Length: 241
Image (cartoon, rainbow, N blue to C red; front, side):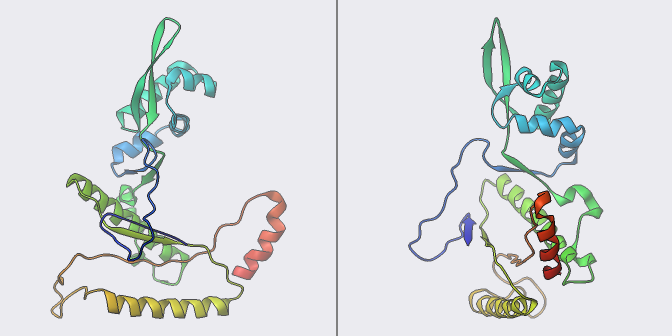
């Protein structure tokens, strides 16, 4: 089970906090501006070029590796740099010339659901709250709200307190899943009742303290797509459904 937290979120005990190695370009970057997203998705080559520049290289070097015309790659590199997906990474000498090198501004990117405007997924629009689509809507809401919170915190020069728990489980029957669900729900209600404050006052006004959102979801892990696993996948899928 992986438990991570950030900002001012503390967990009692003597266990040292796990801190990921912080290296330039090793983090995620949020894409919330339509113009920036459009620049990335405008041409299929741009995703490939950006992936090729996770390590510093020049447009000429990328063109050589991808077997593409240098002028084509150079054009897309300039557009990606203008959209803040690429940063200058020094120059290197090649024969009698100097080549400008670039590197991706992050190791991965998250496209905010807000880019879809009114078409963004919203769990409130899904009638069946027990469906996978409702869980997808919740995931979209989390992504959108968290992206906004990160942006506001960055503008204020602060960090936000977050907590995440991720683990893998196996269930052998629907009955086992049902018992697990009931016990988990009971535990969450009990812990929330004992260790959190009311979300709102009796008159409906916001209560004291900062509001947080807790989301718990569980879903089947997708199977591998290797051809030799197809018979086993079909049998397992029947058991899950």
